[in-house]
Image (tube, rainbow, N blue to C red):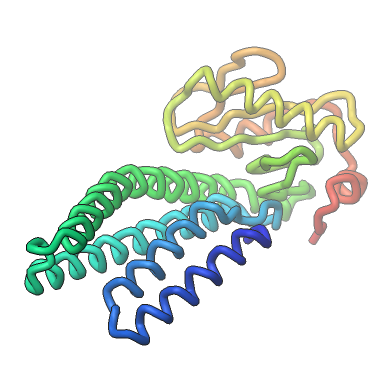
Length: 258
């Protein structure tokens, strides 16, 4: 996970402030600050890419986002608890106390508005991770019959290629989607194929868009085919592009060859 130095510094300042509040009995405020800071860090942090594990990046991203959701909920509970304590102490009858209650109300509303979309985004990443894991499980047996299979390959300019397969039937850059076919994903698959082609130094890399859409494999445009998860492995074995030396490919991609 990648976090910048200034972000760590801000988190440390927030931690010191939370401890000072805790020392004077402001438990709710301290918990709210800690939870809010944790949610902020989860937003700023970026998982590391490219470890060769199917859905490695997507799985780490979904966990980070789920952690953010939990932190937001804790921050909301701490804010609501502080509001209740303030009302029981009759802060609303004092000008400064009334301002504090209004501010707490605004913070609670802001947190509530953040929780639902955060849950949706985390869920989308989790579903995507499961789709990549399922495709990875389909592809991994190819390594036992003379193919190079790797996952979550980091591109030179950021981002990753979900799966790369090289062997007797050619080289393939596979982008997995948990949804049905969408034209917007074709450009992504084509860009992945171009990046892998450049890295391997070969004449052709077939881009593949793997979708959750049963049906016959379809060529949308060069160099992208759309293939369902159910058909992917059989389709790959049926291809007859120029064979790729898997040892040379592993060296070029900087991945481990079992």
